[in-house]
Each structure stands twice: as structure tokens, then as C-alpha cells.
Amino acid sequence: MNTPAATVPPARRLTTSAMIASIAEEGQRTTKAPFGHALNRLAEERPDVVGLSADLAKYTDMHIFRDAHPERFFQMGMAEQAMLGAAAGLAEVGLTPFASTYSVFATRRAYDFLCLDIAEPGLNVNVVGALPGLTTGYGPSHQATEDLAILRGMPGLTIVDPADSVDIEQAVPALAAHPGPTYTRLLRGAVPTVLDEYDYRFRLGRAAGLRGGRDVLFISTGLMTVRALSAAKELERDHIDVAVLHVPTIKPFDSDTVVREAAKGRLVVTLENHTLVGGLAESVASSLAYAQTTARIVPIGLPDAFLAAGALPTLHDRYGLSVAAIKERVRREL
Image (cartoon, rainbow, N blue to C red):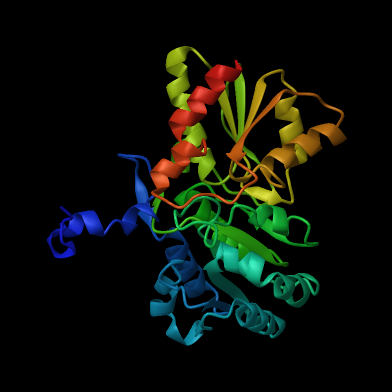
């Protein structure tokens, strides 16, 4: 006999938290809303900084800035094209806009406005896209699995994929100081705090070696750098020595460092929260090809497909982004 809906326990019915779950591992240190707090600190020092949102301030951590500086915040509604056009106008009169929405809407919906209103005149507009790659289980309408591929070809656009709260907090003032347009893949909410353990400093356009290793080289970006570090530590138990090179800037790409590290004879594994088409793996491969350097590359990333909806941890296992899946892949390839 069917159970009446009224008798189903609420805990079983309200399961949406798994759809946009924290990307932090169990027991990992986190920082709440690092982008919002970093932007607020920057705004206290720079009166030219303004914020815009396409009706998603709460979901891009822009609400921290909004509440502290309401006179410098512009709620544009569900209209990303209008938001980017307005941001361009604000930049034209000497202000420094940070415009936030979901990555899918900034890239798929508003590409032409980003290209011709912002990138072509080289304006300092900082587009901040939440839910990059597979950071939601809501399905293809919200999963920006191809945003890097869409934007890498845009002339003059700087693209940043931060790994954790430390990366985000250090990137915000660097983006504001950069003279041209930027796009950042935002990790929001309770964001892992990891890179402070590695004497890390964000440098726009530069990759950073986080740990050495003689057997395998992980080249990673975004949230996958945190997974790479965890997998590297756990692979030590199997006597597999893994180095980790973090690439926080996808464009301009630090080809020199990547080629130098990849040429040391280790298995090279790229890790990205993005389709394998047009992202980090192809950037690494083309850098090696242009430098006439050979290395065996194993790409870990998302398939060239529209992904399923579902609970986020389950999807990360299914598509190979979990720490367990990374370790298993490395063991198979060695």
C-alpha cells in the first residue's frame, strides 16, 4: 500500500541540500563566503569598487558586500545581458565593477555582451561566476561544464579558477588591480581552506608548485587542486610519490612552468572540474606540443556530455572527480 504523502518524514522529502552540497571533504577546514568578505574588505580601501548581481546575491556571496555597501550595490534582476552592459558603463566612468551570477548565465546567455561591451574595449569588469563545472546536481541548465572552453578564445580576457578560500581572498584585490576584464569561477558558501598550509601566494598568470614528487605530477586547477593534494597524501601510503602543480590562471596560461615541470619524466595527470574539451588538459597538451616536449598525459575531468542531475557527491564519484576515483585512476595508469 502506498504511504500517504503527509506521513513521509520531512527529512526524507527535503533533500535539496545534496544538490548544491559543500565541496569540502569531511573534517576539512572551511571559510564561509570568502569572496563576499574579500570584496567587502577591498571596498573599504577602494571607493571605486561596486557590485552587481543578477538576482543571485545570496547565492554568489555578493550579499556580504550588498549589506555593507548598499549604496554601491546594483540589483539588476534576472537579466545578465543588462547587468554586463551596466557594468561596462560603470567601468567607462572609472568605477571597478564585480558582476556576479551563475557561470552558465554569464557565459551561455551573455557572451556577446561580455565580448563586445567589456572585452573589446578592454574594460576592468570582473565577472564572477558561481556553480562552475560540477558544483551542483541541478543538471545541464546549471552545470557550467564548458565555460572555460567558451571563454578561452575571447581576446584580452583573464580567466581564474581558484582552488580554495585562500586563493579567492588573494585573487580579489589582484583582479581589481588588473587593468582588463576578468572571469572567475567562484567557489561559494563553506569553501575549503587548504593552501595556507603550503606557503601559497596567488600570482595572476602564474602556476604554483605545492609539493614535490618523483613518480607522478598532478597539474590541477580550481577545486580539483584540493582533491589533488588529498589524493597525493593518500597515495603516499602506496609508496607513490606525487607532485602537485596548481594552475589558478587558465588564461594567460603559465606554459613555461607547465612545460618545465612536465619535462621531468613523470606521469602527468591533469585534473579539472570542466569538460576535457577546451580546458586545462588541452592547455597543457598544446603547451607541450608547441614546446616540442613529450610527456605521457592522463586527463581527469568531465566527459563531453550533458551531465546527470542528482546528489553532488554521487555525481563526483560517477564522473571521476572524487579523491577515491583519482587514486584509482593513478594506480591503473602506473
